Length: 173
Image (cartoon, rainbow, N blue to C red; front, top):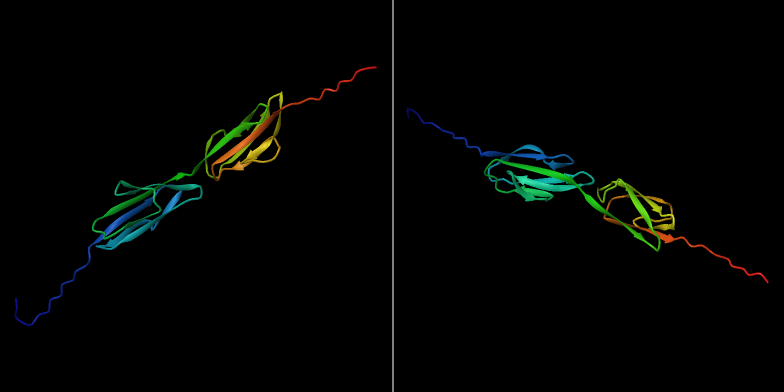
């Protein structure tokens, strides 16, 4: 009712929305947790895997956007979720036997696909008709054992040679 001069103030606030950010084991997301974002604003998230891991997948609102290292929500007009998962970096170990002889190569652990940082001990075992001549490729030296750390795909060559013998022949007068 207008019985005097009046001033009316209307207060308007921007709508806000939430983005829930979570990371699986072996890495992190930044920023993490519940983020309040103003209507129309943008928010960037970055993903940091632990050593020996990589980003496996990023899910935005339950839909995969791939294995990326960051994601930006632009012009936010709804609530969202973002979740990142991580997987070990895997490397392949190839063992090769070379030379004229025969023998076996054993590995511990005994896998050909190994997580980054895994220490592998290789052992050369020549057959009775052969000698071990040495390692090449990812290993070196002539010791029967060699240890390597898996930080890349590696090929290791063990060389076995047939044993040779000297026959000395002499004749009498």
